[in-house]
Length: 513
Picture 1: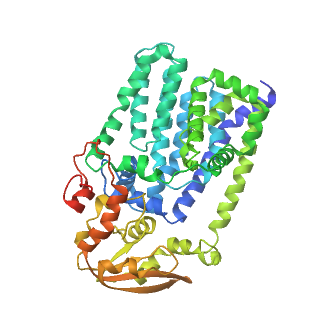
Picture 2: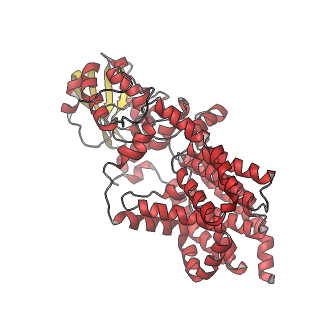
Picture 3: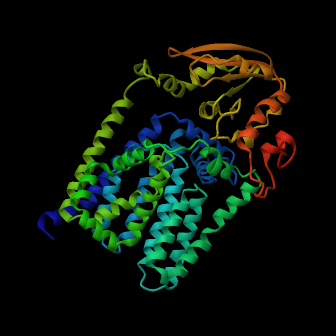
């Protein structure tokens, strides 16, 4: 090791500490200063009504938010605390997983990962938060198991715990099956003699899918309908989808890693051959998502459960002196993000006037002031879309239903809300669009309707006030449309319950004409 490399190695602990603390401080500030988003507010209500499952996804994010509420209350920063702390936990897991191979290289892997922009500016809690945690923990346990020279008791325990973790990942999001696919490919190609280890992983992961199947059977299979059917009805091939996916990967890799990947491509190939499990954990998911991108827009968050291991491969492939240059390149790229975020943080809502998103900005930043104008003691507050409804509910501390058919996603109302309870009531519906609403869409369900307008920070918000709500008309109109569009449940799926169907037709599985 050269003198310069030795000095860089001695400075590593200091760099790790400074990076961790500064990034943590920025994430905490964002978590505190940024109003809750529609998606976050939607998941917040899962934490208010803990269950074994929810319409869109398995229950882990609801359990996590429930725990945060019990420990720290309903403040936005408290709900977001898991994602604020997540990069630190991931770094610790990566360090623990690969330090037996080379402690210095393990430290570099953590530093490079912590320097990535996403780990500085992401403070929004989503279903991906527990998915990433449990997935990386499962991989870390598997990496340690694979480092055991014999299939002894310690190795079996590590395989079993890896299975438990991937089962928890499954209870976070169905994307965990991609991790399971990577495990299958790895054992099939390189570790067939360790098949008992794979068997242990599968057996210990099974409770997750079994819990999910049991809950879905009693609730009309909403996870299957959402993930496999309803959200994919309009999926068509477009060249922009795979190009967007490649652009997203390029952004996550950053200019520094892209350049070094090309320059040291031979070293990376050699590192991939030496660390086959890490290589498979990158190749299989990225190829899988590439194939999927033909018809779907692959979101940045889809690949984050595998993202930390990119930096493990680079840390073990690049020459010692090059690792410092890589860290400097990452730091420079991230600094641009930090400057932009801090600059935006010191602006005021009024300064965004005139921008296309100003309507949404006012709705999110001035929610309490807007609702103070709209709400009345003798009316029920609703919205016509899930994101504003969830945000309004979070602000007033009361669940706000979605009036109308909504869309294929975020249909938790179908499980929670019984619209017959609003028979005869006056309902005020805040419209999510900035244009005046078509009143004919509301007249069939009320004795009378009138349009209302409220101005907040220069933005006009439209509200429909309907008097004497007619549930039977709503059941025949809106609930029928929801049933026809979103509850075409395959007959071969066994069902023991379906809250929506019971409210709509009185049966667990409504007959179709």
